[in-house]
Length: 376
Image (cartoon, rainbow, N blue to C red):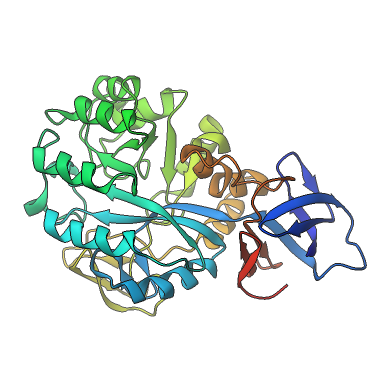
């Protein structure tokens, strides 16, 4: 299969115009221009690596904490329509038996359109003071042996865990996760700069949704925001919906970190891809009003309805170079998960890609060389 477009965001440089050749599940060649024998031609289009979303709570009416196996196909198809080729199913704080039930559903999931890459457990080891939309009733301590048992049972399905490092036993939990190849992320935390810096030194590698659910930056106490920006190896998740983070803060983050240390995430909930109305977030009632923002009854933000292709468009509109925006949605999250053959377009890499139209919306998504949304 040969696909050509007006621009290709290849691993090494952009091709304008360009094409790629796919055989089986791999990209076998890339080149300039669009061959006459191409199977799919998008003269005004853009070919990008498939997006990898590290924080998906749901979508298309599906709440991952309460879903059935048959619901996953609908969610997977929706994600593919946004250019997402792989995602982490994100389970927020809930009773442990409910999390176990969700893990059982996810562990038996059939292959879908967008690929389920594993689970992101966001909680229950979070600071009540920064819990956001998480139910305080079900928060747990870092040294809770029931939590440790659940994590142990769910390996290797669990790929990423968000926790508050300042809680008693937080450092030990970070070391435990890191030793087992799980990405430890800091979030929903009141950690000081020193506490967060120590957590990064012990192996934490990510800050979950930078600026949100953490102590605010202050010039005399930079807090977790300062520690995340200051640590040269920390990848910062970023929700680029214009609600969770102001565009000026997004621009400053990119100037400081560049695309290699920012991973765009949707933090999408069940309402993503759906009309305004009433939904759930981890089983809790959420309402999406005319502004398209999911909120609990008390007004607390409860995830988003952001599409990954929209996140990329937003960044470009806010002044971030297109290539940087695309890499933050693909290469950086792939590298964080250790996926060495994804997140880029190069010979020998897996053919996970999306084609964006001139309006930035997805026209085609391929996963392992297979069209899962649109047609070449």
